[in-house]
Amino acid sequence: MPTREIDPMEPEDMQQQHEEIARIAYSYWQSRGCKDGHDVEDWLMAEEEMLRRRSPQREERRREARSAA
Image (tube, one colour):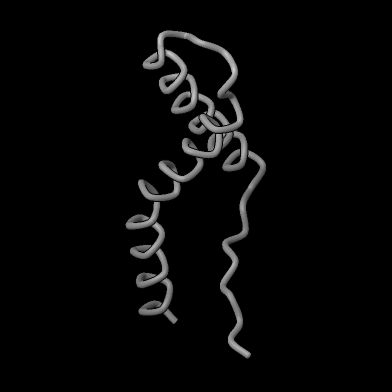
């Protein structure tokens, strides 16, 4: 069974990630005209967007770690 690599996160990284998701979700809320009722949907879409943005950075770190080993 293949194992998944898990990137350990420092508390500061977790806080940064939370703030980034909140900013993105807020922008979705604003673009909808500040209408309530979509907070969970906005948050989940913001998480997905943040992960897409960070994916290339994460791959680069993995490549660097493997080449250093």
